[in-house]
Length: 313
Image (tube, rainbow, N blue to C red; front, side, top):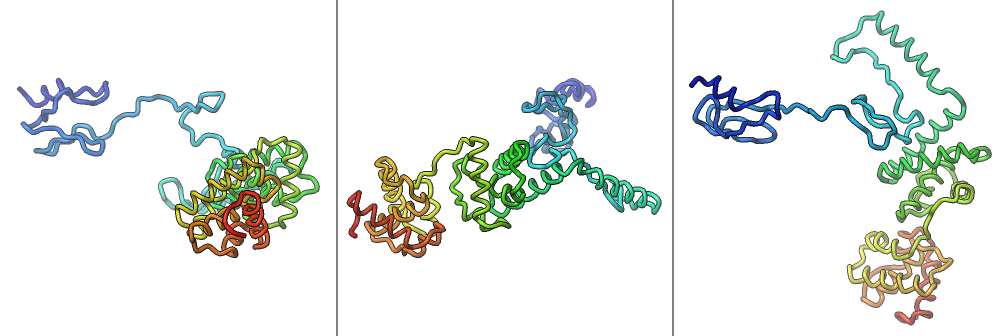
């Protein structure tokens, strides 16, 4: 029997491209599959090198309409939702040099495209705010979900006319902080302000406005959530960390931590736990990691020792 007959009986290009047998169509060898490639281990014949994608059109489940393979989905992280166009320069898609006449034409197109990018002053402010949010998220090492949520908050604040009288930088920093609070991430206002371009008081004012006007679903911050971060900063022992978390949970249940800075109270819990377990943790290091002064840590420590009877005063 000819090899073409064997190949025709065992391989069908109209189906999934798989052979019903492991026998090579050209020799007595055996077919093996490695890294998506099916070949003969004797003669090296490649039977299946690239599978056809028969899934059809690409569908974005979050969109109301079906979209074909025309790029990435829409995003709120950019002012134009990712629909902007970049006009290249110098070379075409294949890397060939463009003639001078074509370069001059593309230069004129880029100039007109830049002028038409911003349809209004509000859109320009939105672009500036999205860029500032992207810078803050990158500097803080946050994930893309925080950037998306912060950009959505900025859009909502702009639609609610909360920007007049406040700088774009302060509102962008407040949106990042509000997104972290909504996602229950242990980021303090001082951490956000450290990489922002405005003072902490302006960021706090913008955040309070957001929280009051938009009724954000922000849960209260618990001191126990700050303990792992502070313990890693001061290199505390695992038993000290567990004892501090238990102490913070006990203080939360009794209402002892109400009205206190959660990071500073978590630092005090770590200090008390380190004292009980003979840990080498200084009060100054804890205060620095929690972005509070040593007096705050000391006052919370004294309250814990007096109310819960832990350690020695």
